[in-house]
Image (cartoon, rainbow, N blue to C red; front, side):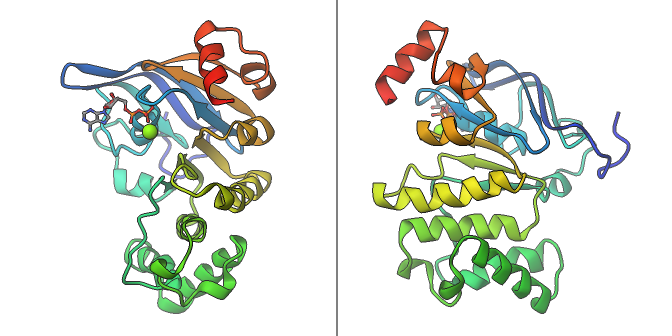
Length: 251
Ligand code: ADP
Ligand code: MG
């Protein structure tokens, strides 16, 4: 099915029968999930249900035990695939911002462009400034991470991912480490990205974000998808007892 790495595909992500175990512990027990291009899918579920592992299997930060992962038409679980090439097309934003503390915001955005994409400094800086503007941090390009709030650091991390011009973005609880008053600015950036058509797979506990922005919500528990559908259905009118029980605790 792969006609080369740039072959267009309807699905941005396809997971088929995905299993992941760590030793004896089975963390993902057969996940089937498609994310279409331009779609925003939010994954919700209790701590330890396998949400992070699921995201990490998409870009092979974790190697699935069995099953298939297809990203933009490339089967990444194929042993012959050039995984670095696939990873370049996927932006990932973590709960912890993982910025380089010894580099300014601008340099945090240029370094991977130069090293991974081989861009020259001028092009990398132009792209970096454009993306700092997108996240509302034009005035912070010379600031070091320690001088930025958590929300600003996370927006730099998003701008850094965007500077690599990814085809899709994975977010793993991007606002969980932030003080409550800083969450809104980060969610606003993500909302804008969604509106611009970015394909996004987002693990989040922000139910209002999931309700307003997601095209689809997936509820996971104990390594399986228990329920999925439109946000109004899964968050607003859950059918499964486990979903109801979870929502009653977080809403
Ligand atoms: P969630 O993100 O939903 O909280 P995780 O995917 O982080 O869940 O973890 C699911 C389960 O897998 C947990 O029991 C966790 O301890 C375990 N786990 C995650 N990563 C590893 C690892 N590298 N080695 C061993 N166990 C792990
Ligand atoms: Mg997690």
